[in-house]
Length: 130
Length: 100
Image (cartoon, rainbow over all chains, first blue to last red; front, top):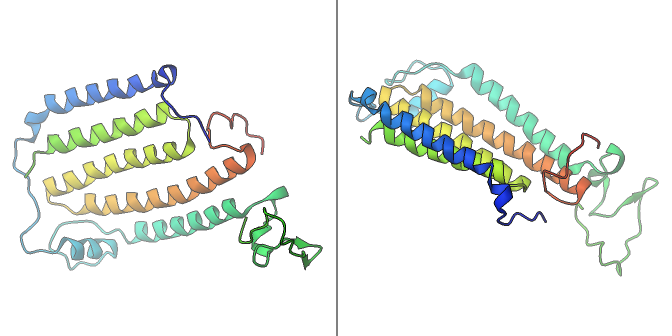
């Protein structure tokens, strides 16, 4: 496993992050007077969850102002599908770019189209997708 | 209501913690966690200003960002698995070439 212990030389780039926080904090606190107006907030008694649902499906029933996100909702759904498929593909891919794990029966390797004989004495052969 | 500048401070702190993790760590899993911190810092801003302006667009956008973060983690863990399989480690510094 990666040695990720404390090492002063590897921590030096982190100073940039700390410096960035200093800059951001100075900017935020310096411009705090720009937020003098009280927050508008959401109407009392109005369900935020319902209104988010209306916004996601582009339905004009909500009382809280928003925009329609139906197209974005569908695009995100496709993106999640692609991500799931690619994650499975990356996890399953083995030697020479072929997917072997999906073709095994209970973790037994396939040899020339047949399931290889299980060697019970082999400690490394514990079944399952390896 | 909590003033918006406090949300901005919280979010910038979270973002910088994530940036610190990315700049200093070599373990790919820590990388992934740090990227999540940075994404959530953006989400805090979206939700805070959604309430400040009384408009739900920010909260809906935060939902999309969470969904994209889930997709990113799914692909990221797949890449880490491939990294471990090919290099025997999850140290991002070892994968210095594009050779498969």
